[in-house]
Length: 425
Ligand code: S3P
Image 1 (tube, rainbow, N blue to C red):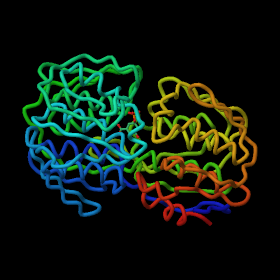
Image 2 (cartoon, rainbow, N blue to C red):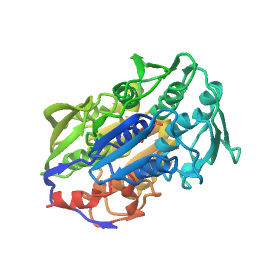
Image 3 (cartoon, helix red, strand yellow):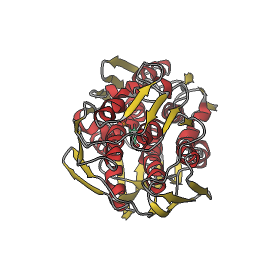
């Protein structure tokens, strides 16, 4: 895919469903009793992997596009799949489903693509094993493929070394089936969609600061879920509006849950002109339209407990920092190294190729903004967030940018390039 400089971006864009919430609606709907009706479901490849895994375990799921109907089997109604479960590129599918599978009365093997087979799974193997699960990495390297034999579980209080919603959710889901109470304390609060949504399905979940707790459930009950737009997808248009001179974009239907909305705080700190309009709630999650107008940005420091609230937005924030005057420091973000690609290394390499002044650090990067970028050949490393980040950086770079593996945006935002085209002037 080749992308050149544009004059400006103008108009409106409506953001597809949130990836994290779409995954959870399928998973919780599958283990609930009765029908779960999901609207504005994200039809990205990751969420389709989740659908396919539960279909293989006997759950009838009708995917009608915007709406998905899940005919839930109840907490104990999943069936042993006849084949290996393929989680594709999706860390959320792999880790959350492991929490459910740890407590079933069958054994299963799950795996995913080359990226998934490199990502650390000991972070869920350790706590689930402490709960009594039998789960092992078949290659012995702490990665998928994983073999899981369902077992009786007991509650634990897990002090997680990482702020990770995937770890927290895996443990809480196992806790639905465990004897006694299960709690997870994180070093900083990660996204809380599991806690909010499980409560809606009837689970006994509570949260206090960075600790989430759950008691075993007798049954969950099917729900109607309206998935808000994904702030992680909206982030690309926010950045585009702020980076391309003369732009003004109305970004409709964006989930602004505080555990996800760190990018809005960063925009404010960088001096950006972003307004929140039409604030409301959808299925217990706060939602707003975002109006973004181009204006000068300045550098900032991004560190500490805000990191989990913008972890997936750090690549595009790094690109924004190149357009800002002065220094931006990103630290406490070593988790970026274990995402779909090593996002510190890949961002630094690709931004440097476009002429940016950026230095890799142990747990982030330092960017000196204000240098004009020029087109380059960008290897997305098949990481959807890298492809989208450089599609935006290309819009204000001199010359042409070629993105290799550009189709990987299908993971979280299949209509990304057409939505971007519709705004380009
Ligand atoms: C996700 C949690 C985050 C995020 C991922 C989706 C989720 O990962 O990076 O894209 O849906 O729970 P970690 O919780 O591992 O940081």
